[in-house]
Structure formats: structure tokens, C-alpha cells
Length: 171
Image (cartoon, rainbow, N blue to C red; front, side):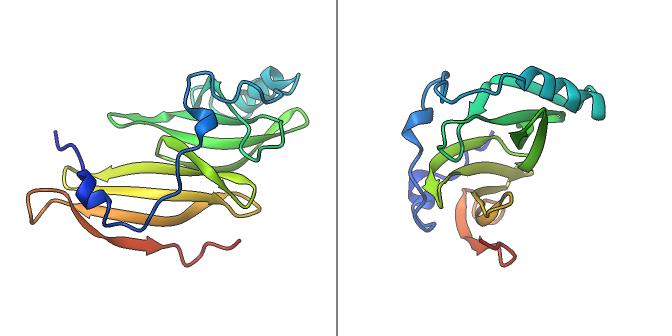
């Protein structure tokens, strides 16, 4: 299996935000305040959706906007494959969860921008293409801000192809 771009090829992309230090353990952000009714909010979500759609991971209570209250990251069971599961990001509003973003990628949390943690997600297309996307909160939702691409189809090793900024991203 292709290991992806090496450190030299990674360094060709524009600089990335640093990982968020508070999220380095499995107990990441346990200090945020979970809503008392979080279980009921998950149950309502599953009542309104196909009950097999979401796999809730209790370790994914994250204080994304650093206000002391937990947001939640849900794994999308129906998107699981060899590269993992997609994710949805939600905020608690009363006894419901409002979705504010998502992707088919697993996220790594990065240092804050505009008061919200940024997210990094890796993707692949076949055996030759890798992408790394930077997600930022734009006031309404998490959206792709930029994507870096590497490809090995012609050269036989992962080579940096370029960075594309989302022209539809609005802050």
C-alpha cells in the first residue's frame, strides 16, 4: 500500500496550522460541559434518521469554539469503508443536534481560527491521489477552506500537485 507523500513533498504545500494541543489524548476535551440531555438528543436524531445512519462515539465531545460547552462529532456508519467513516459535526440546541458540517474524512483538530478549532482531513482517490483539506468554521458551518493534492500516477512516488482555495468559502 502506498504510504502517501513523504515529509519533503508535504513541505512543498503552504504552511499548515499546528495541531491543537488540548486534543492529544483519548480523553480529549473531557473538561467541556456536556448538556444534561445529550442522550435524548442522540435518541431524537436516530428517531428522525435511519437508526443505522449514525454511530455515536462518546469520546467525541469536543469544545470546538472554546466556550466550555461541548459540541459533538458523530461518525456516519453508512459511509464506513476501508479508509474509515465519515463524520458530522453538530452543536446542541435544546434537546436537538444541529449539524454544522461534515465530511467523509476523519478530522484532526488544529489551532483555532476566528474562535473555532480548525480541522484537517485526509482523503484518497484510488491508489495514486491523496488530498489534505483544511476545514474552518465560517460563522454558520464548517466548510473546506483549502485542499492540497499529491499524485503518484506519473512519477511513481507521491509528488505535490498544488493547493486549491475554495472560492466559495465565505467568512
